[in-house]
Length: 198
Image 1 (tube, rainbow, N blue to C red):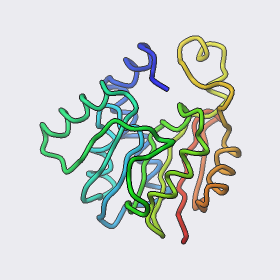
Image 2: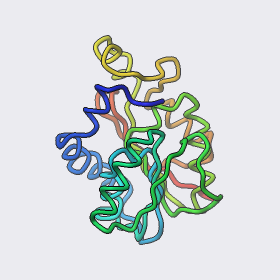
Image 3: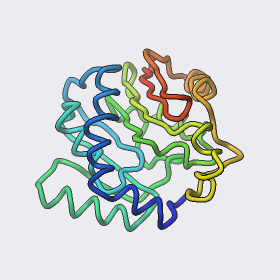
Image 4: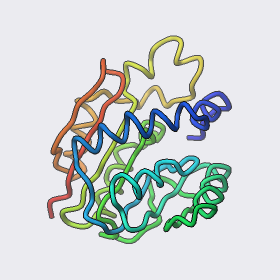
């Protein structure tokens, strides 16, 4: 699902960058630790800030990243190429990731999967592309935030398929990902770290 104009503006501003670097990344790092080099995938890369965080904070050697929105892919490519970042960016769908099985040491989701109607399929795809022992880092917007009357007017979300903290944890387990750590804030935002065991 594409972001509406309001949400796209909200996601592409300096405040969002600050929140992503200072809050989201730190919370995921505290829950799941750094990578030991290797290649990571970012699901829904937006303007490319998350890709930079994965390289700088989490220690990936290289990042592959995709977004459903072609405009965001173009912005991310320009941003990452300008700074000579080791990243490959393409347009893609989280429910059908264009990558081979067992390709990544880690997969990152900075608030994207709640936009995917078939979010359980997206989690299965995350597991498929993770190497055995690979780690999934996810920060997600939860049902309580999505269904709030004001947010329903401002954002385009698939309301009928949104999830709460418990449902997302259950979805991770059903996809074959073992939750290592998870926390939430007021039932509005959740952070999850899960591993592919086999």
